[in-house]
Length: 101
Image 1 (cartoon, rainbow, N blue to C red):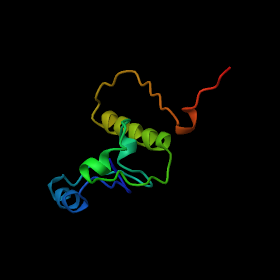
Image 2: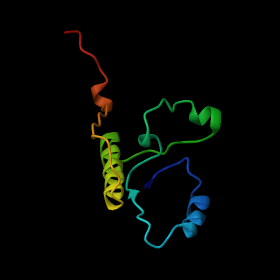
Image 3: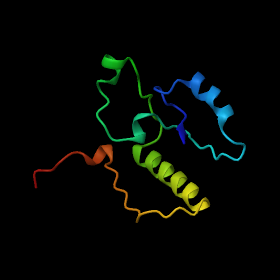
Image 4: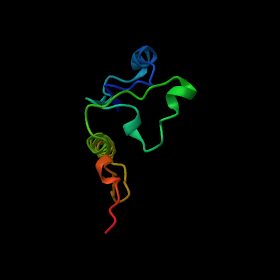
């Protein structure tokens, strides 16, 4: 699983590495996804410290997480891997405010 707008992955090396995958490898590109939405971390210092930019996503974090989870579940089911119960909670960017109620 990769993201179309991932600004961290070295695209040249990524593309060169594809030749090592078998012909039946399932490759999924999350259209509109970026590097940062594959995890939940504070990436504000990535650019100043590492010179890397996660990329600007054109889809929501929730959408990218859901697509990624679906891809993992798909592959796991194809190889009949036993998965733990699926409980995914994604904090939406707009849900981070608190009310004074």
